[in-house]
Length: 97
Image 1 (cartoon, rainbow, N blue to C red):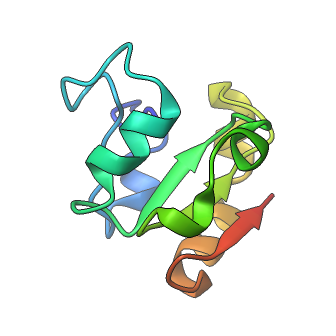
Image 2: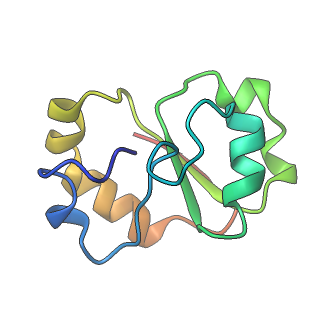
Image 3: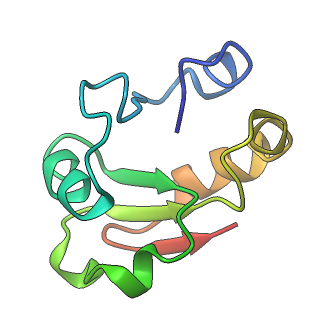
């Protein structure tokens, strides 16, 4: 999630957020990125609808939150649902909004 965007960061201020680009991991594919961030983050947020079919999520030590889009207006409209999902998602769970 591009949490550094001015509209999303204040709304999710209670969470430690980072983007692949912001963490110096731009260009890394989801499988490798999942493994790298699993030790640092509890939830991996993505809009890649094929992720659960391309990766064995049972082997990843983090939960996954799937968003319908990576477009800022869509994410902004979903902020209440994202906040709720982040506060209720189970360890190693998968939630699709």
